[in-house]
Image 1 (cartoon, rainbow, N blue to C red):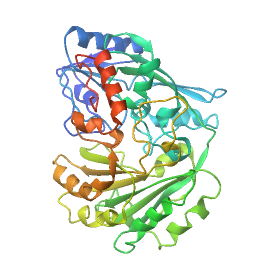
Image 2 (image 1 turned 90 degrees about the vertical axis):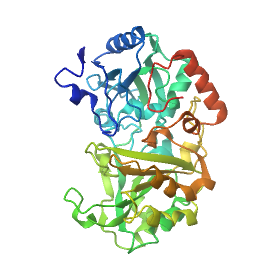
Image 3 (image 1 turned 30 degrees about the vertical axis):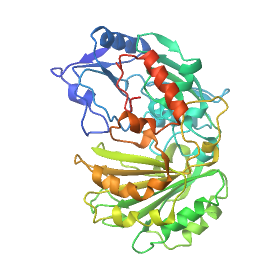
Image 4 (image 1 turned 180 degrees about the vertical axis):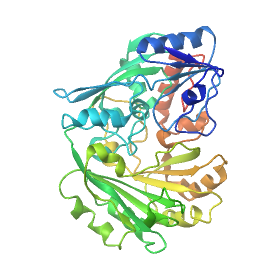
Length: 426
C-alpha cells in the first residue's frame, strides 16, 4: 500500500477530489488496494489517536480532515453474477464501472444521475437513482456489506449494523465491499427538454401538474439553471435562463407520456429518446469538471404552486451568486418500505429540492432566501444532496426521531471516540 505525506510527490493529486471547496489537508494518506490495507490505516489512526476520513470516487466531502485520509480509487473491482442478478462492488468503484460490467449481461444497477459518483457512498446515503420510483432506494436492494469497523475488525455486517449502514452513511465503519441487486434493463427512454424560462414561464407548473399523473415507471426532475455564456455550454443554452426537465422512463410508451410537457412549446434543446443504459449520464448531463460548490437540500410533502413561482426570481440571473435549483420527483416505490428494513428516512416525502452554488464564496444567505418559501412543506432533508457541512441537529432532520436515536446509539457503540469523520456526522 502506498502512503503520502505533504512532502511526498503526488500528495496533492491524492488528496483532491471532485469537490474543491475546503479540501482535505491530511498529515498522512493511505492508498488502499484491499480490505487489509483499510484495516491497517484504521489501526494506524486508532493507535495514534487521529481522526480518519475516506475519499472514494464521487462528488466529494463536506467535512475535511487534517489527520488521516484513506483513498480507495485503486480498490475498485466489480464482479457480476448474472444468474443471481447481483454485482459485488469494491470500495472505490464508480457507478459507471458497475453499469458497464452489468450491461454485458443485459442488466443494470440502481445508479444515479451522475454515473461518476462512488457506488458505495451513494448507496450508504440511500441513493435516489434513475429508476427510483419503480424500484426504490439503492439501499433497499443491498444483499451483503463487508465493513471495517473503527476497532480495525473486518466484519460481514449483520443485524443492527446492516440496518444502520443502509441509509446511515459512513458513521459506523468503512465499507470495503457491497453486494447489490441488478435489474433486467438495457435501455431507457430518457434525456432532457431545455426550455427558456422567460419564453415558457409555465413549464414549472406544467411539470408539477404532470408529476401527479405519471406511473411509477417515470422518474424525473427539473433544474432551474442560469447558464453562463461560455464555450463548454451547448450553443443553444449559452447565456439563457433555463428550466431543464430530465426524464428517465421504463417501458415503450415514453413519448406518449411526455406529450403534456412537449405541448408547452419548442424547447431550446431536446435530447430525449431511447438510449442505452450505459449512456445514462447523458440524461441529466451534469458537469464532469471538478469544482468548488456548496448546496442545501430539503424534502417536501408537496410542491406548492406559490412557492414554486418564487424560484425564477429568487434564484435567477439577478441573484447575488449563480444559483442552480434542482427538484426531483419522489414517491412511487420510494414511499414503500423495503423487504428488509433499513435506516432511510422520510419515505413519505413527495419531492426533493436542492439549491446549489458553485464557487468558494459562502452563499448561505442566498440559499436560505430560496428555501424560505418552502418551510411550511419541509419534512426533512436528504444527506446525499447536502453538499455543505451540517450540524448534528441538521443531520438529525434526515431521519424520523426513533430512527435517529437508534443510529446515534449504534454510532456510540461502534465509534464512541468519533474517530471516523463521515460527511454527515451523527
